[in-house]
Image 1 (cartoon, protein in one colour):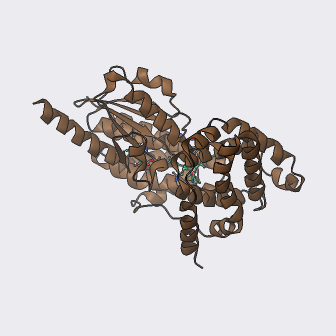
Image 2 (cartoon, rainbow, N blue to C red):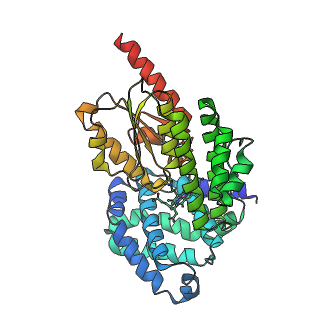
Image 3 (tube, protein in one colour):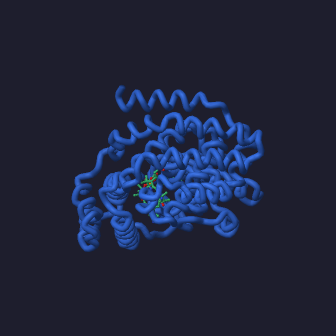
Length: 374
Ligand code: B12
């Protein structure tokens, strides 16, 4: 069977899993920390995993267990079985690339299943357990799928892509900067440089990290270099005089991936918006300050699926504020890829695949509002 049809078979079976009642998903979501603590203990005590555990620092394991619990809370709350399957393939691939033996995963799944059964009320545990049984049953399918290659970057990279990526991987900041300056000689070159050079290069950096071919340190340096290059371009080409409405751009609470949101902020600003850019990990309670005076637009970014409930909470907080009745909310980022109905379900007005989409939508809403006001 090919990797594609094997994946389709798993997706079909997963999407037939029974829906988890909202109360059971909420019971799981409210106990993420306790579930992760139980799993920490069970995994540390697992004698068969001694050698495997020595390859991953205890702190990284702790973070991973919490990420897993938050991820499953999102999956159970939103019924996102397809996201679960695709992400578990990624987990197997990236952890094995870091030297963890495949046997590690069934132990984690079993530990979560036991933790669910001991921490959740019986009804909720019974509703959640089929998801973990599914993961346990398909362990060898996930091993096989993880061995197939990860998908290549989306879209067509620009002629600058190879040199840019190579400079990032050499940690060569002068080369990154001079290439950015060479490629972006005026404002019109910002969009293609962001979307066809930086975007695919960062995606490839992620792929190399996922498959263990570059270290976490190299990935951090590459991201920092991109941020510094974007700052240089910002000063030269983006900073301008606002002529449209006010826009707030921020990442969801807990979300550290900020380059995408920063692109949204830069492109909106270049299009004449008066932008307040708040960056990564913005607490829900900060939004009322960010949104005073009321903006025309709020753009929210999330890369990790386990942050979608946080985006939903932020939107709910914004919607409950009567001064923001006219504010449009757009969401974007990797967490929303391939899920056309999700943005509406969490209360957003729209979703954009790219930073350019944010500009297009914002502009059309603005023109509509101006026409209505005349
Ligand atoms: C850099 C990076 C990091 C950095 C981020 C630092 C920073 N300052 O931003 C750090 C080290 C913090 C990090 C951490 C983690 N990361 Co990381 N990271 C990446 C990487 C390599 C690049 C991200 C990036 O900048 N992409 C470029 C931008 C431009 O793309 P983008 O965000 O998608 O944005 C575009 C669109 O989505 C859109 N967009 C974005 N926001 C918005 C908003 C609106 C409103 C609109 C309309 C559009 C829009 O516009 C942009 C351009 O058009 C990606 C790889 C990848 N494929 O993206 C992994 C990746 C996202 N990370 C990953 C993981 C697993 C993690 C961690 C969980 C790792 C860990 N165990 O700790 C943590 C999670 C941290 C957290 N709590 O958020 C995985 C996710 C896998 C999955 N299946 O979910 C990826 C895919 C790597 C991989 N291939 O395995 N990461």
